[in-house]
Image (cartoon, rainbow, N blue to C red; front, side, top):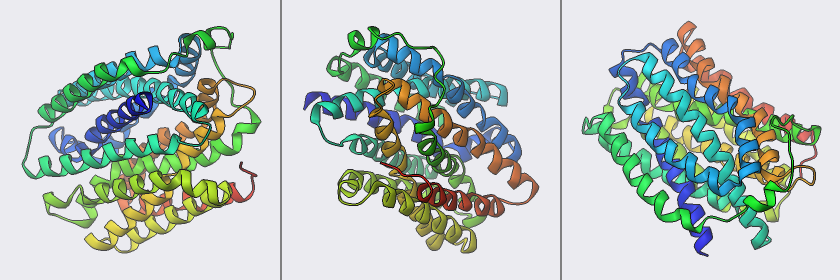
Length: 374
């Protein structure tokens, strides 16, 4: 039980750190006087850092064990949030985001490897509950960010506070992480892992979902500010609604998946994502747009933990390498999502960007129906 609680805390503060950054994007945009196009290009730095370190993360986690990588990556992740908060120009922000994305990816691969290792000990699906903790953290961070935005609390001190709390928690929980280094060191694996055909269907679904979830993290606050409300106190409401539904859905995903076919769950994810985005686009008012964000949260919530868990059960690759293989495809979506929103918004509007985004929900349905998923 102590190990499960410890790993849950790592997921929690991983989400708390990330969502704290996401909640203050509109303030950072305003402070640095960035246009939608410039913001989109700047936001690209984080997923680029994540994507480029995917093979590195899988290799290091397989070679040295997920425990050591979690310890190093979590510490770096918290410290780099502070660097983002104190960035005074677009170059500093871009570099900080690139490193933040790199550390976050190593954290992501290694802590999910810990979760899958513990899942095997429990002999039942529990990984969605860990992702649920990530979402709970995001929910708390969204509420805190919304409150601090209303109080005009400085971004840099906000991030310094979050990083300090996270680091203390990481230090306390490190002793309870699973020791898996010896098992992984016995296997010699290539540095770069090419996604196997068996993972392609999972990767495509992850790609479509991550492009939508990444847009919600990076652009929902900006969308509400530009298209929905002029009241600063309500700018973070859409993001908060997204996190609420994502959180609740992830805590019932394991139960739901055990009772209906995984394929049906994924099809439902695509439908909810599509409908939610269309509601936000065609009814750009506070209540309907908030409902739309709730639906999108339900749609994207189950996808990542389910595809990671499926990949982790691979018979041909160790969990870290298998997760990295699927994530290599999925993270392309997170890579192109934020700049795509920014570039399209710069040429047209944020409404058009979100309208286009909705059809990735349709793509999830098509991919799930045309590929047997177990």
